[in-house]
Image (cartoon, rainbow over all chains, first blue to last red; front, side, top):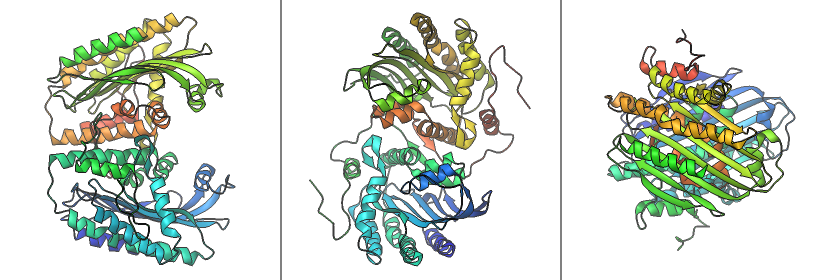
Length: 302
Length: 302
């Protein structure tokens, strides 16, 4: 797993750098108990306003409180246990408001009593909805799922819509993708093959979108809307995201956890886009998630 | 209480409008069960980038879940109860980075079983620390407390420092002020007199600061730092503020609750101000709260 995340990080960083006049910087850190991570960060770039492609491999003692949150499906914890975790985490906030935000994360976790599982996923957050972008992103993940288990995409797509729910707004964070946790088949190699395939599909699901949107023209109106949508991203991450809240409350590395935050955000009292605008059309899809990939792909409702 | 918040809102709005080329707009809303509120909002002003002076008077059924959170000192709830609440809430985000953010809130709550209490407070969040501003803000609140109960200021100042704690950052939100909850003396008139005095002290504690800071010059550097400090404000409100989290989770009015959010915010990976700069000096005080008012006032440490 460590080899996978290290290689994938290098490949993704190298590809993304082709889109920007700036390069990623490397920030290496160590975990107090054992292991550490390598964050690759690009800020204030020409195409990427803020991007992080981070890997970590840490081990140590898992606090009982943490175990109870993580093992929500297995009842109360039996620890404290020794744990080992390896993960890859990607967040990209492009500068152009026509280019969507993307997030992806794949992780492997094991405890000293023999339990282990994989988790992860990828989701797309358009500022302005382009249906072909949502379709491409979902299609790549759909095809990846189909190569491993036909039950995966429908389950993980629905899980993603359910997870990235900004409940107080009645909006999803974006147009979703896939999300899964507690993945454990009989043979870890089966799950590792799936997770590897997902991680290696990242660029195919996002790079064409970044390319075609980053040259579109925009002005003050688009930037204001981008700021508002970014504020909803902030609200989701700080209010609902398990990883963020849990990480911050249990003394995780603040900079790595909050790498996901957008470079800027804007809150305006009582803002509601005018009917018939591209902003309203985007919001409508966030309020009513759609199917984007075959075979469940349906025509635009209403 | 309703008369107090209505009159105080009118006075504060009238005074703040003297500082800006724009006026406050009025947004009246109704609560589904009973009552409602009047939000007075000024956005994108010359001096006030975003300001809200809001009152609400609502009644209805208090969900048991809500009661359990609110009555944390009294054990499990016995409801659902009928409740009635009246409150005033002020948040001001000035445009000039030299002018501090201010927040104040005073509220009265009663249940159908005869329980009642007051809560509230005021706190100041400098972007750049000016000691005389923190001293003025604390002195006005100190003097207000002294007029009612000499035990109040030390308790409520410490409560404020404890409450506005951005735990994952190891920083306070600002230089504090006073904070109190569950205030219930034998005679409600005693507490009402204190709360009235506090609410009527708001302008004296803040208006001179707004006046002297809003004409100071600033540039890109100050605006970037303001954006970073505003992001910490967002982190506190969404991660830790009881009113915000509780309100959003129990179906409160989203726009009223998130009125407190700054107009803009900025997150930069790995930012740490250089030693010896005004930014570093401000951060130092947020990391180690000080005494600002007599008689506990001490000289600047270190």
